[in-house]
Each structure stands twice: as C-alpha cells, then as structure tokens.
Amino acid sequence: MVEQHQFQAEIQQLLDIVIHSLYTDREIFVRELISNAADALEKLRFEQSSGQAVFQPDIPAGISVKTDEKAGTVTFIDSGIGMTHGELVDNLGTIAHSGTKAFLKQLAEDKKPDARLIGQFGVGFYSAFMVGSKVEVLSRSHKPDEQGWRWTSSNGGGYEIESAGDIPRGTQIIVHLKEDAKEFAKEETLKRIAERYSNFIQYPIELNGTRLNTIQAIWGRNKSEITDADYNAFYQYVGHDHEDPLLRLHFNADAPLSIQSLVFVPQHNRENLGLGQTKPGVSLYCKKVLIEAHAPDLFPSWLRFLRGVVDSEDLPLNISRQTMQDTTLMQKLNRVLTGRFLKFLDETAEKDAVTYEKFYREYQQCIKEGVANDFTHREALGKLLRYESSTTDPGKLTGLADYAKRITGDKKEIYYLLAPNRESAEGSPYFEVFQSRGIEVLFLYDAWDEFVMEHLRTFDGKTLRAAEKADLDLLTPPVAPDALSDNAAQELAKWIKEKLAERVGAVRVSKRLVSSPAVVLESDRTMTSSMRRILKNMNRDEAKNEGIQDLEINPRHPVIVRLDKIRQTNQELAVKVVEQINDNARVAAGLLDDPRPMLKRLNELLEQVLK
Ligand code: ADP
Ligand code: MG
Image (cartoon, rainbow, N blue to C red; front, side, top):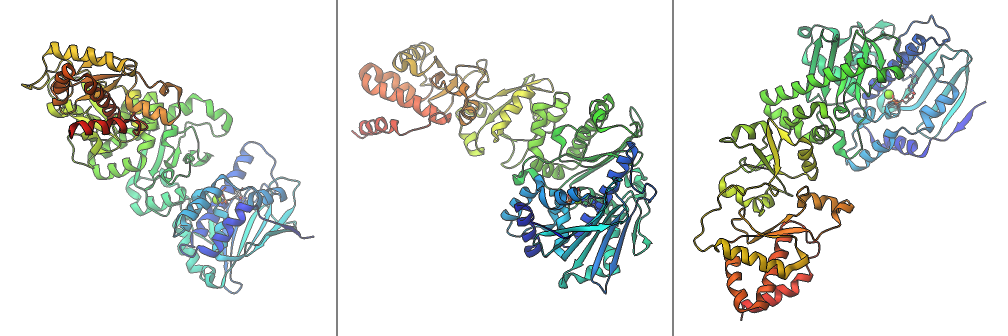
C-alpha cells in the first residue's frame, strides 16, 4: 500500500524555491548528504555505547556513494541509525526545523538566493532537490522491531511512503538526477567533490567500491603537516559554509587538561542578518569520538559564533549528555578554552589590526554581551572593545588600552560620550569642556554601549566615566573677560530657579561649558540623559519622571551675560529667554519629545529681536 503525504507548508515553500530558483553551487548537496550520513553513524554509535540493543550490530559503520551514469542516479548509503516510518514523516516532511523559516526569510530578502547557506540552517536534506527530479529514501531503523520503508518524492509535490520490507539497517538516498544535473552521475565529478570533505569524516567512505578517505582527525595531526587549504576545507565542512574562515585557532595543551582544539570564526556573523541567535557550533570529542555535537557548554554563550571541534582525552568516554552539563570538568574546559581564545583575539589585534577590525565590526555585539554577562572574563573583553574617539580620525577605532596609554599625568579617568554619530558627539555641549582642554573622549554610537561601560566600570585602574557625569570642578574654567562675576552668576542662578520653579531641579553655575549658554544634567547622578532616552524608548518606568534635570548655566556666554542685564529692565522678556534656554538645552540632550509647543515663544522672541 502506498501512502500519500503532503509536505508541511513551510517545507513545501522551501522546496519550491530549492527546485525552481537555486541553480548555482548545486554540488553542496553532496556535502549535505554525506554529512547527514556521518551524523546518522554518530547517532548509532551513541545508542550502542549507551547500551541500547541495535538491529544488525555487526554491520560495520561506513558510508558508500554510488554513481550510475546509465540510470542517471547518485546514491548515498550509510549503515547508521536509520529512520522509522514516523521518523521519515517527521524528519523529512512534517516538522519544519527552526531553520526553515530563517532560511526562507534569507531567500526572500536576498535578490540572489544563496544555496550554499542551506546546510547552516539545518535544512541540508532538501538540497537533494536542487539536482534531483526524484529523491528516494530507503531506510531501516536500528530499533530491533522495525521494518524498512521507502520514502519517495518527485519534483517536490508531496511524498509517498510504502513498505520496503527486509532491508539492511541504515539509510540509502537515491537521487534521480534532473536532465541538467546529469554530471553528478559521473564518477570523476563525485570523486572531486566528495574528496574535498571525506578526510574529515570519522567513518570510511567508499565511492563505487573504492575507499576515498584515510580517517585521521585533522585536529590531531601535526600542525606543520596541515595546509591552509586543509584547514579551510575542514572549516567549510564543519561550518556548512562556502567562504573561508576569518580566523582560526588550532590550540593543543597538556595541562591543566589535555586539549586538542581547532576553532574558526566565520567571515560573517549570521546574527547580523537578523535571523536570531546562532546556535553554538563547536562539537566535543574524546579521542576522536564524538561526545556531543554543537555542545552548548563548551564556550560561553557570547562565543556561540565559533565553529569547530574540541577533543579532550580527559573526558570519560561514555559520559552522558545530562551529567556532562554539570561536571566541573566541563567548566574547567570552558575556562581554559575561553581564556585561550581571548588571548588569541588580543594577539590578533596586536599583530594584524586590519583583520581584527574586520572581526570586531562583525562580532562587536557578542563582545559587548560578554562584557555585560561574563564576569570572569570582563577585563580581557574590555580590552577588545573598540570605539571612535575625539582624537582619532572619523571612522578609525581605538581601544581602551590605547586610550589609557595616551593619558598624561596622573589622571585616572577614561571619558565616554554616547551620541548618535560623530557629528552630534562633536557638537554636544557635554563635549565642550573636554575639547577646550584637549581631553580625549570616546564616542559611543550604540545605545547599549553605555550599559557596557557601566558593567565594565574600570579598565586598567582607570575609572570609566560618562562625559556628562564627569566632575570637572577642579579644572579652571577658560578665561573670559566679560564673564559674570561669581556673585552675579550665583544670583542669576537663584533667579532662574525661581522662574522655572518645578520645571528644573537645581540651577548651578557651570564650569564645564565653553560655547553653549546652558546644559541640562540629570539630578539623579546614577542616570545619564542618554540612558534616560533609551529607557524611554523601552517604555520603562524609571524614565517616566522627566522633570528632574538640573540646569547649569555658562557665566561666560553672551546670552547669559546679557540675560543678567535684561532681567533688571525687562522681566517679561527675560523669563521668556530663560524658558527658551532651558528648552534648547533639553533639545541638545535629546529629552524634548515635542518641540512644537515652544514655537509660539520662539516666534515672540523673534518679534522682539526684529523690533
Ligand atoms: P540537519 O542535518 O541539520 O538536522 P537535514 O535537513 O540535513 O537537517 O536533515 C533533517 C533530518 O533528517 C535529520 O536531522 C535526521 O533526523 C534526518 N536524516 C537525514 N538524513 C538521514 C540519514 N542518512 N539517516 C538518518 N536520518 C537522517
Ligand atoms: Mg544535515
């Protein structure tokens, strides 16, 4: 009896695109089907090692690829875990992996859909439909009471399942090639493609009866014998990527733990495509035997973009996934690996600034996440941060360590200013005093950078301080012959407070201002106005209370000097001017949501000017 099934809607949509729009780089289907075969063998090995009874326990583990030019087929056979009827339905047609949606979205956004990404999204099986007009899957589960099944789908229009009776354990995937894909039935073609990855697979692979690989894990080999091409091909296999990696670290250690590790950073951070969090991508081995694919605890979450392998002889071979999560051994591994990788990043920054900057631009969110969440590595992560600064050229980045080196005298502070871009940072009233005194300020353009700085707090013994919170009282203000006397300025401040009343907190005479008449500062010294802006956007309660900014006036600014004169003779005008000065300062701080109410006053003031 033949059962008819429909694909789940998203899978159907994916298949339609795969069949009708993906014409380039079709050869990746070989990598994907071989990698599924290897996964199936690993899963079987795992079942066996945990004592499960297995059907046909004596069939050796291996992968066999067969080409048939006459029939126009290519077949992938493994003696792995196999699939039951239910698993065929679920895995190949019903349950859309989380990656399906993400991949569809990527395809929809990209004018030139990139087939090469398919494996990264966990939908590699469907790549068979790029080259096959019909795909047949014959499978028999390792579970002793199961029979064999044949799953067939032609041109992606639903699929059929029927009994296949007494077949050997494992899975056979027969791809009936489309007219324009017949080249993949040629032995030479398949050999060229399969050889590229076969040496990284921990099981024997045959092509038409001839052995392709010599199983030797690349990470266990002597570094001097491994070429860049080997490394890159291995990365493309484990990372399901078509590009070479941006960075690689091949790191071996004997103490405190025995570790052989080979990890890569992809050229591009997939999270920047807006596809949500990347799943961890480093697999854990013990003496070349897979313990856990994509182990979540091997590295901290902020290093989830890493791809590769870690092999440690110190792990008990039959460790269960459950117990692994809480072993102190895992924590130790994590600490050693993370520390080593951070050191590697620091060395890269030192030796090859261009590559480091490329890395930083792709992965800065992860580094910042690390600073905020990973207390153990905070200082080392802080060293990796990069920002523009008032002393660098536009677009050039600098680090905290370099800033610290540039500090003269015994000053103990690193200043930063959050602004939407360089132009507004340089024009900010909070920057004036720094500029006039030649003090460096880091420019932060990402709203979360302020949180990052507050988590980091200090760097290399220096305090990180927001420019607007900086206490610059000790600095002598610039000389201005027409400035109000201290006394007159204090009197004026008192008068302004009377007039603005509840609309401001305290009114003070400022020592920080050079070219602005006034500036607002948060009365609550734990908050900055940029932070308030962020919280406001998030609709947070802390930001609701808006009337508590202090106003600082610049006794050296002509507007303030003349204001003091006019308040003796024309109170009404003076009050308007004060209100306008306050609003202007609020605009500069990004705190005035609706500037329209002040237009009426502004027009009245213009009227006076033009009298
Ligand atoms: P992924 O490998 O990322 O899970 P695929 O689309 O490549 O995604 O495969 C989907 C699922 O189909 C696999 O997770 C597995 O359960 C099943 N599968 C595919 N090929 C095989 C195979 N050769 N043997 C057993 N199961 C397989
Ligand atoms: Mg796969």
